[in-house]
Length: 251
Ligand code: PGA
Image (tube, rainbow, N blue to C red):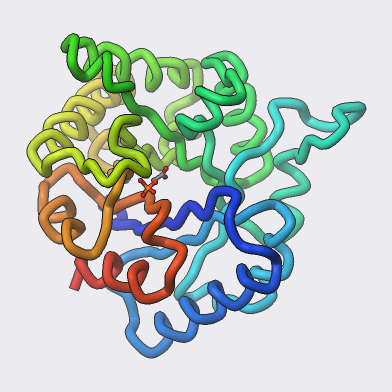
């Protein structure tokens, strides 16, 4: 059976001290209130090792927010999948819309990153989602299909390790959430696209998270939908209380 997951995406927020404190607070709260889902924090590269040192693997997983599409070598400023793995992280967000939009990441690069993440034992949290114009002109299902299809050269075994996050770009950081029905429709669509390629078992076992202004007040309604298996949380993951409020939607 697929897992329910709540993952935080801290983006470019918190200094090292602030980040370690936040991770520590979340960890303490989770130890006191065992979650009914997997919980992950995806943190800046600079924080990975220190955060790894303060969290308890039994209740809190650790991920990076990106990795390089190159294995190693003369790529000044880049961080490889092997480097991420060596910090103790188990996950990596790939294809976030901010990476696609601001850093021009394309399907080919994202496939290369995904392959390197998997080869290094990291589980990718692979983000897909349409922009407002595509939502309004009705092309959103096709847009998201093609983002998922970019990974279809992966073996079934490898694809089975991917966590998908549907994040409508118009809902990220805008306070505007997709309705639970819009999320469910897209998640069911994503699962169908996966099923057509990899079969029912892999499709049924793939966790598909919703992201985009998810908060304690709307998480329960979103997560109650049959194909919504949790959330990828930005702004609301930066405070232990609001992050816990979302995790508790699974109680
Ligand atoms: P948000 O971000 O929760 O602040 O909308 C979600 C994300 O970008 O992962």
